[in-house]
Length: 287
Image 1 (tube, rainbow, N blue to C red):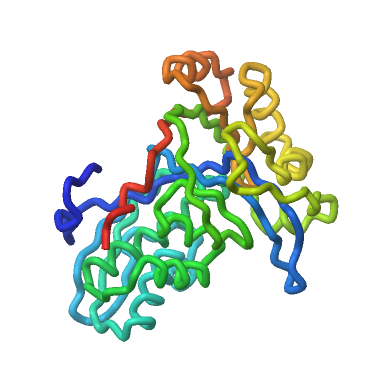
Image 2 (spheres, rainbow, N blue to C red):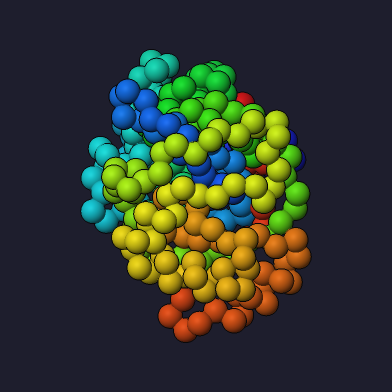
């Protein structure tokens, strides 16, 4: 949804939570506490979950659309709303409605994006007044990918995903294939065979097309469906790679027609879609 002015975002709005792609993902080390040190470029794309909110006077946070098998107390959207309440001593509540379109365990950042949109939306609707950097710090306690969605810019990220150098990316359309398997992030990062010593890049010197995904080999070995989809896509688009820790794989094209033509060739049993890259997060200017 496009908005011409920040003030137009209201309780009656549909709030987007867009997907991200990792245009590369290098593991450059590991901290003493076990967290991996990463370098990656995050790109937002025009495919999203959508959230809407209703005010509550009783201070409760209720998710009206729970995800099967995910208890409310562990749902990232509920946790994000409660975290904002606690951080600001806000006594207002909200009923959350989530239209889930992004696959779970797909490497598209869906859960993190949902949490970030909750933080941005309720900070605006409750008028709790936190700055974007303050919301980023809150988001990091929910998950490593949450801060980038709060940050709102396509960016070169480092550390555990919280240090940003913004980048301007060319227009591109992406063909994304979804192997429809849930790849647990912890299983990939915990794999003993994961390469953890890729030499760091200088963010100022990175250019589109540079880099690879260190997690790809592990995910392909452990989840054959990921390997199958990536092999097919690479045959037609050598620049293809996996996003995040999987399962989705993607390839970027300068012309939308190219992506659409390749989507039309997708073998029976494979599922995919195309989405344009975004110049920034749809909520990048909200406060």
